[in-house]
Image 1: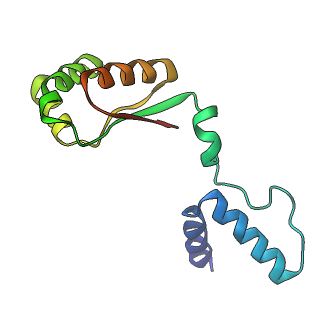
Image 2: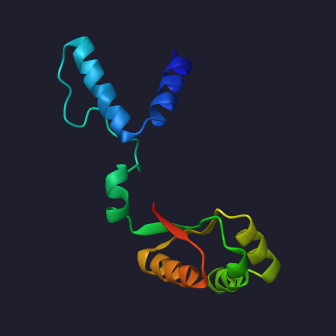
Length: 129
């Protein structure tokens, strides 16, 4: 029985917040009951997608692909500057885009990194954590 419950928990953990809300509605309908407001909540530590960027204090900085060939050298220089990587590591990161530049950093630092990389000619995405 415990393994069966673990499987259910694993499957529910994969649902988005919107899917969880739909599941709550379907269960209420099927069982003829009304669930409490927070009966079906996101797993601990998971914020709703719409609020993630506005409430996040830490961000993941992602270098997006494609990077124009004529901008690669300037992007490699900018990546070295913001990450402290060596030339080969920075080149590999740029050529392997999309890649994470920073796994977690404050919003101000993420914005600064985005500004430097964008000025060099590449696209950067900030993802709230």
